[in-house]
Image (cartoon, rainbow, N blue to C red; front, top):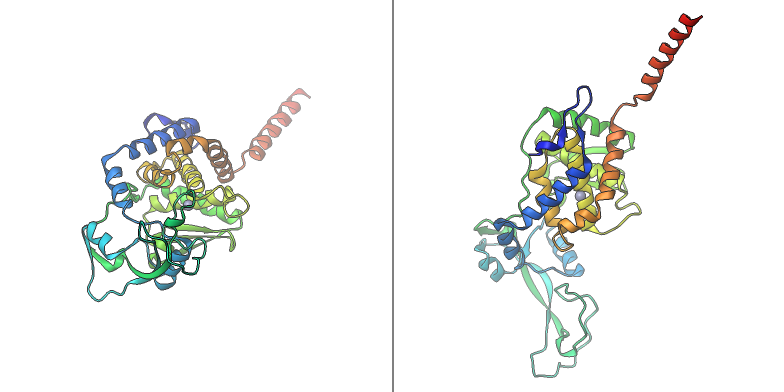
Length: 323
Ligand SMILES: [Zn+2]
């Protein structure tokens, strides 16, 4: 819970100390990353390879819905079995020369075809693949058994009045920005996403059936991608983009009285885990604050004309009295 951060105000939405909120986000990410659940999630995660771009394309061409992919034996190590009758997804696996043996003369492998994406290392010719063979992997949906440890990102299930009010404001903001908001059945969402921002088509797509709290949070997140110009000129890399967008959603939702900690801390931890976690949040906090302020300003009716009208009337009255 946010506790002290929301400061009650009488006739305006709760004023939020954005800096305090961002410190709370940093601490939340840190506490997720120190938890037991996080460690078992990472242990399971480490068993999955990072496939090369070529193999990712091969996997998605054969199974566009694939989310978690591994070989038969890896699934068994994780306590899951490939279901009977499932066909494997073909990928190219590098074959390395046996140690203490000269690599056989074979055509040189194309660059970037290795199965694993590893940091660049000094080239050791004895460790270059001598050829590629077809290997088969299976998506998690083709397996059954023990549930996989999940990152601690808890979908928001509530239906608060705060979320309903915020969704109306966010929809109006999206419209003002010239963005269409579409709803799609979950099975048509890419890789189980709850929402995505499509900068080329100028639209936001949300998954159908989200609870109001989650819907408001996801809409705020996708609008933040738009405001931060992700995919439209600014491309600081996916971990930074996700930390920024979720940070903005966290701050904007808190401003309107919706606490998204259960989702946001784990989400940011998961995306920032190779980039310093809370350190990345600190690094992007100015961008988060700026975009959150912009979004909140964009959602509030302009008060200046009303105030100046009232003041003008008062001035006129006062002038009339003086005459
Ligand atoms: Zn995102």
